[in-house]
Length: 435
Ligand SMILES: *Cc1c(COP(=O)(O)O)cnc(C)c1O
Picture 1 (cartoon, helix red, strand yellow):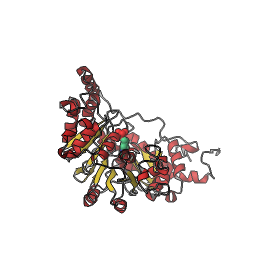
Picture 2: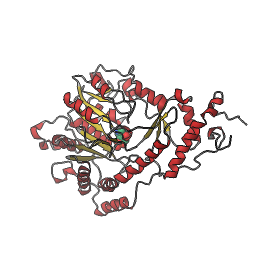
Picture 3: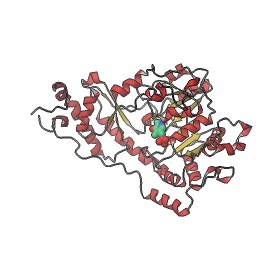
Picture 4: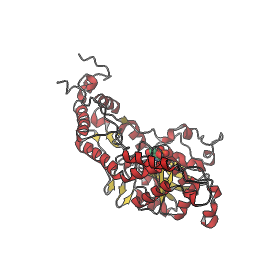
């Protein structure tokens, strides 16, 4: 065996010898945009009272109008994060203490924390094995007269079964909220991810496809929901005259406003969004194509008629077919220089907040309003995926050309072909006393 064939974990030469450069997401145009705002002297155009400044300054309003046009929706309401947007959405739909909100357990925690601020009770429904998004069959099984909404997370950039979920929600007279933080420009048939639910929320956080440091965008086609989102964003208790019919539930506002600088940067980022997303899509597709046909490894698939934006490229491992534990495979892959992680986040019902049923205040509100318990909950697809099967790579993080992607492919293929070297090691692979 040559040192090229010997696994790096066992003292061979690694495939990738230098770390990849970070993806360059900020350029001259963003710099100019910030300069323009600083020169204007107006870093925020918002006032928290009725009047022309209630909706923010020129950059915020311009950014919202451009977002509305780009995604073909009726309204866009900018906020200072997707977390803020999710909370505002829960308020806008009139969520009341004790209402249930069906959520997936495999997502960023904000997707399931948001309902709690209005007394909502998260109810977990397992994910699909293929796309990692919430399973409509599991959702349907959890709907009760207490259900007010479903949160569909378009995880890793792939749309959940959105049309089907919207139909299910319409039939039950409940809301579909899309956590589209990871999936800008994702698509299900002719519809953009984020635009199929009653409200869709995008993140402009630093780590996402397009970003403004911190920031979020809410979209909706419903005039009343848009007004309610704007009120919750900006001290709405002062402005309830804006509501038709005077239904003032949850119109206790906060300050969730985006700054003029963030909006100015966001306008540049939106204009370049197609290029950013296509770059990551190309990396992911090349990686997937290069890794077909390897026993025990399943690169990500895209459901028919959908567009996946590959915020995360997630491969599934079958340890039995691979003949190796995920941990050992991962260790060997790291030694070859392939940056990745195993799992994603532990199933969220394992968080102390749920297991102990303690969220707001010392008496366990809002869980005190519900019989739902989380300590004996199991979502088998999520648990298996997180604990044994998932291995993720972030195309968003690195500046990769085709040759770099080919090195990533070569690293996986080398470990796959050489996995017998690890099996031959009795027990710990880390002990490299093979001289
Ligand atoms: C990043 C993310 C959020 C939170 O976004 P922020 O803008 O950081 O608040 C929410 N949900 C998902 C699925 C995310 O990936």
